[in-house]
Length: 316
Image 1 (cartoon, rainbow, N blue to C red):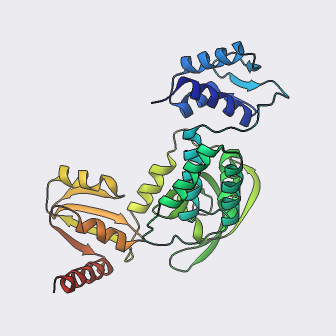
Image 2: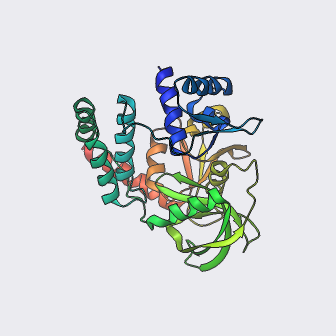
Image 3: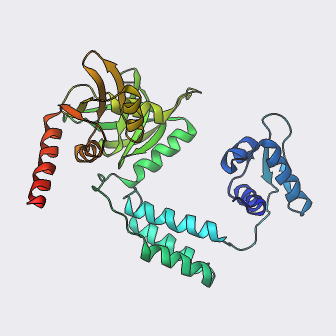
C-alpha cells in the first residue's frame, strides 16, 4: 500500500533532483491525479519548504534557488528498489561499467542504517539471476549519447553494420530507446532511407551528435514501432512462421507473452515474428498446450529436434 507521507517525500526528492518539473509529470511518476499533486505542493509549502509554482495550464514547480535537503536518507522500500535495480543492471549486462555499479552499491550501503544494510546484503546474497544467453556487448556511451539526443531532439550521425554484413552511414533522428529480450534498439527517422527505421545498438559502429535539431512526432510510440519492426523481419532465416492448431482467441492469448503477430489465414492460424534468439522461442513453443507446426526457419526445427533427442535420452 502506498503511504501519503512517502509520496510527499518523493515529490520533494523529485523537486530537488530537477530544476523544474511539471505537475503532470509528477502525477505520472507517482500515479496520482493533478489535484493530489497540488495538495502535496501546498503541504510542502505549509511545512516551510520554499516550493515555487508557475501558474497556468503548463505551469511547473521548482524549489527556491539555493535550497538544500537534509542528508541522504532511504526508506525500506527505496533501499530495496535501489539495490534490486543495481543488481539487475549488473546481471543483465546493461551498458554500464561494472566498476560503476559496484561503486554505487558500496556508496549506497555506506549511508544505510544497520537494518537497511542487512536487507540490502540479504538481497545480494539470496538472489540468483538465470540468464539464458549473454546479451551482445555494446559501447557504454552509445546508450547515454542516444538518450541525450532523444531528450534534446538532436540529430545524430551513425555508422551501422547490418545483419547481412553491409555497412553504411546515415543521419538519424532518434525518437526513443527500447530494451527487448537482451538487445537494445533505437527507433526514429532515417535520412538515408527517408523513412522510419529501427536499429540494434550493438550493430552501431560509430555515433556522433549533429548540430541539427528535429521535431519528434507527438503520438509516436517507440515500443510499438520496435515491436512491429521485429515481428516483420523481411526474408532470411530469422523470420519465424508457425501454424497453430487452435482457435484464434487461444493463439492470441498464448502469444501475449511473446512478440509476434497472429492471424487467420487459409492455411490456419499463423504466428509470425522475427527473432535473434531461436532457442528461447523453442522453449516457448514446447510449453504451449496445443499442437504447432514450425513452417520456418529450419534452424528452429533443428533446435526443437535436439530438445526431443535430449528428452528421449533422459527417459532411457
